[in-house]
Image 1 (cartoon, rainbow, N blue to C red):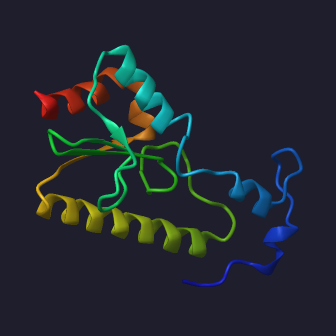
Image 2 (image 1 turned 180 degrees about the vertical axis):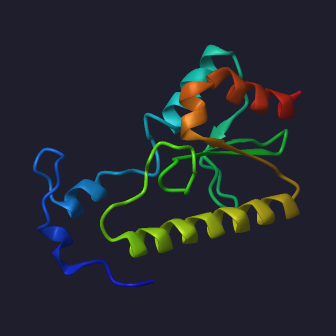
Image 3 (image 1 turned 60 degrees about the vertical axis):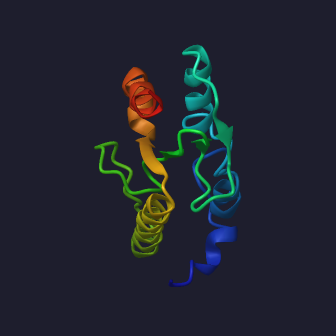
Length: 146
């Protein structure tokens, strides 16, 4: 992968005067309110039990149901390259971001394949679908559990 620009530590953003490096360091892969924590809240509201977080299996799914061998990933639209029309295309360092997102998509496909070879069912839920159609997302999970 190419090098990120040297000025990332000093390049200012429109987010509270943070530098680009400071801003990106605050993006977390776990405990994200619009993905993982929202899904957990919906599962609890719907009385769905038996799940565990961050099982140490291929791809480190967000949620797993060990008995049902179900692995659920809740993917952010930007980071996993979803073309949902939210206009999430980067305007600077476009080539680098496209390489990064493409690598994420390749890793997602590889992890799906590895989990399926190990006998797991895999469900991927997009961030936008979780916010727009939460009941559909929960129903997808329930369909594998029943």
